[in-house]
Image (tube, rainbow over all chains, first blue to last red; front, side, top):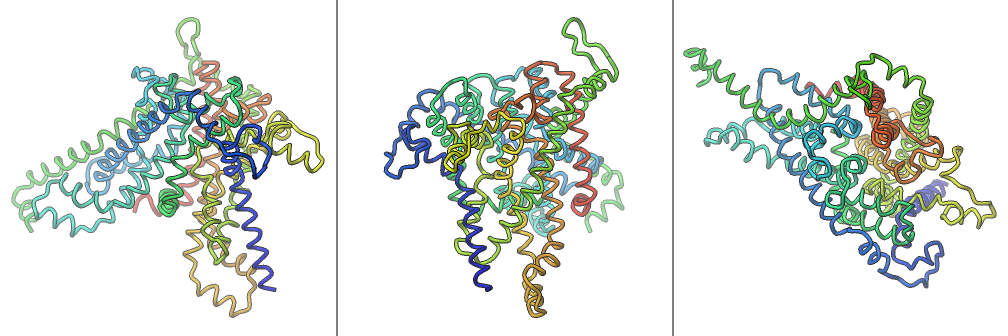
Length: 269
Length: 305
């Protein structure tokens, strides 16, 4: 009887898993087959790359890729540098106003830039940055979340290591660079993966501040391309959708363990 | 020892050292502070400030006190999106939590194809919402879409799923649950792995059934995780509106619109930025209330250690 309930559970788990993969599997089916097979599931249907070629030619996806790459690199580089410096100050210095400042940083965990779209648009517009890639990146550059994670990590660094480095004559920056940064490696990877995934996928804010091919990231490009009024063929839209998802999806399939662990670390804090 | 000698012999030098430390720390924090002040603190205050002003389409903006708020309370659309948002939260949060728990329990034990199952459940997490919305849009397309084709195969008539106020919210909720459950699964999984195996052994020696053990031991031990996930899911239901831009534009007749999407419409389609600011104040208040609950119940241990 125990055996039976076990196999029923296995069956249920597999059914749910296959159901969970269905949307993705379907999008791959439709992207790689001619449009007359979009809803006809025939195993003999011919495979084709045509939908991808069409999508690539009908919209500047190469440029969108480049924009997204520039965006995620800019955000990540900025976040890492800024969060490292701030976390170091919070973790290792005793100074006037530390607790107040830390509380002010935590405000961003509560009220994220994603909901401050109205006023952030005004700020970006006042800075004369509308429709540029830095405009998308700037509100996210100082990440309270990154500062918080790194501060936790830095607090765990043994004092002996810091003192040893000091004895060898390292400056404050030297200690940060040679002791703290190397010891924070797992945190950096976790934060990096979460940040890249987030900004690769982010949509509403980039939609608001961009207005041209030169600054639009992939997600916004896809939305513009797939809008019903453009009348683009369904199979071609799925091909574009697959192109948008592919890099992150492949990275995830290759580094599954790191992804899952990073999302977990980042979530639990 | 050096420090002791210094503070004895030259208190002013020690004082100067404290000052240098403070200045160094402030310099390290400067980039973060400037950016946070510009893109978080100032916008929050400006939102509040602008919510007390008229738009000033013709002439300068005027201080109008609580008029925007009065207008908001009388605004049927506002009431509807707020109601929608709560319905949406109630529809998605418990469902994704229950599914996440089920998934975690499955992949935590020795089950055939465990890593495949884990992969299948987690994959939607890494996909952009906008791509997901595109795919699901086609599922729900009347007649031609997959759902209708499947139903027709079973002998049912077609239905305009996203065009019908009665079904549109459920359709969106199903999609969001699909996207989020796997993400929450990993937190349950982590928590399950911290439950000592001896407990299970002891229980089975005592002759407790698996269900009894789950209900009386596992579930209570997972309580903090459940609370943590509920709060995150709740926050997500207020800040994730990407799917609406692609799938429904909040329609039909605002039946699927959520608060943040309404803010986006008011601000960037109707360009009524002061009313959008008023709406944002409401959203900020909700998020702050949720976050404070979180702080009180969950984070007390972590923040000031």
